[in-house]
Image (cartoon, rainbow, N blue to C red; front, side):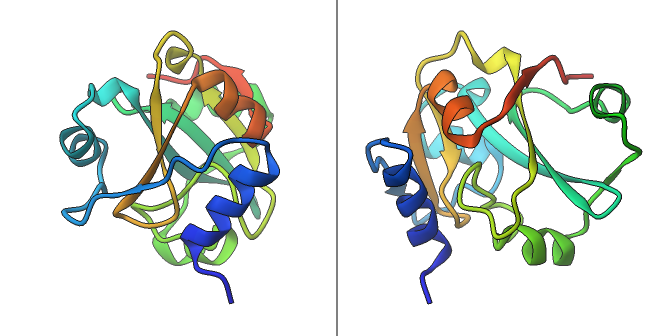
Length: 154
């Protein structure tokens, strides 16, 4: 059975992206931790947050400095949105909180990408564990995750 990091690497290759996965043993669990480890701005961290639309997973790839507006998600998607707990996140995505990647999910989620990431280059996203990240651009990230670009911040 492939590890979650291996699943992300395979998803990157399948999308025609370079495998830019890097490990930071001190951890990249939060956007601030990731930015400090990488040496970039917190805004450049593309955090993957999992929500529930009934029993469907919704993954929002948000700038590390933004909080996601549930009201905006509900308006965009037409579903009642709720926060997902750690067990449900792991069961539907295959990733633990702190390592949820924007690609390589066990269940295909509804994907949204925060428009505030677009002018930032590069951006860094979790690569399947709380200590692995990969480097990309927001446009490439939207394409490989098949994410709808939207205004999602509070």
